[in-house]
Image 1 (tube, one colour):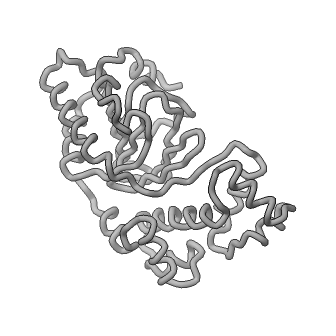
Image 2: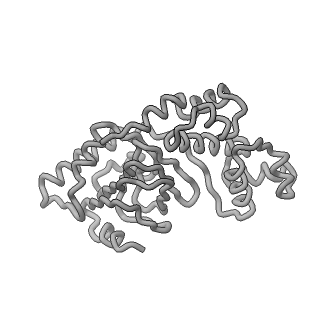
Image 3: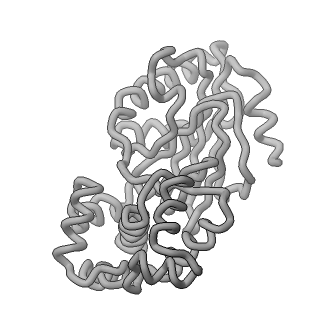
Length: 266
């Protein structure tokens, strides 16, 4: 386990700031502070014990204290910005104390994160100017934390279902229907449906739909493929069906999402 985690947990009453050019490959862990993580110039996933959150560009991860998690980067990031907040600074009844999520980085919040780029380590109330600045940043976080990115993939430790989920991820460009996938694994359609509902509380069709949209989001950010090409590579047989589903889930069109996420913020 990285030594910096010991430093993060060392004093519960102070902020901890860490900016790194390389993502640390840390297994599932938790800490005693709330964490804001902004991956500059990269695409990543936040994994908890039962969910996986897609982190596109211009969004930040919010990880409450005590939540088991790790962050996996799918691309080479320019820099990873981490700010750890004392839990006592947050209202007892605010959802950010208990709920992880992905939130948009406003221009103001982005500039504030960049302003801390030369800081490192603990920042206490004795560091008056820096401490007050981070208090202000915390208030911005509270303000934007009402609008999370509405896409989360459930995960499971059930080995039988995990094999099915891997198969889905590896075959998104193919027609995936419940009967065919169930037969491939020796299940009846009813049995596989129950396996989904019991272990991840979602249907086979909903899981496939979310996975396809997440795959397309990665391609919209990382490639120059046309939206039509991305639609077909993500398993849709028409651009209109893909665009409708994307808009329904993300509340943006694929073109709007791409435009928001390919801008170089710096």
